[in-house]
Length: 109
Image 1 (cartoon, rainbow, N blue to C red):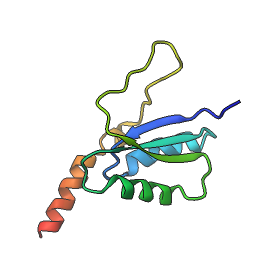
Image 2 (image 1 turned 60 degrees about the horizontal axis):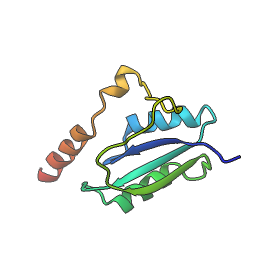
Image 3 (image 1 turned 135 degrees about the vertical axis):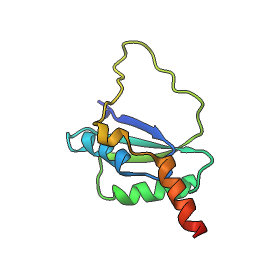
Image 4 (image 1 turned 180 degrees about the vertical axis):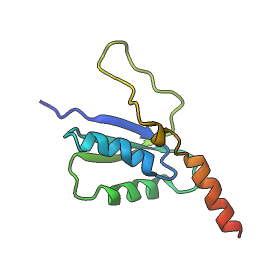
């Protein structure tokens, strides 16, 4: 039987504590995760984002990191086993947009 993964799709520009919280919550419960990095316009190239995430999870066989083309929509069937992950409020408030704005401010200082 093939291993089933939880698929986590994103830009990950940057891969932040909120992303890590979600991935780790699955990994720590013995569930494999596939992190799919969108090849889209970002501050960090998709190749570099993949490399960074692979370094974060180096040695953890249950985490796979792949690059995917940019996407417009994720379409899933009904009642086929997919679900939406809920996270605590302190994780919901993490914003990669705010992080990138801080980077921009620091660069211009």
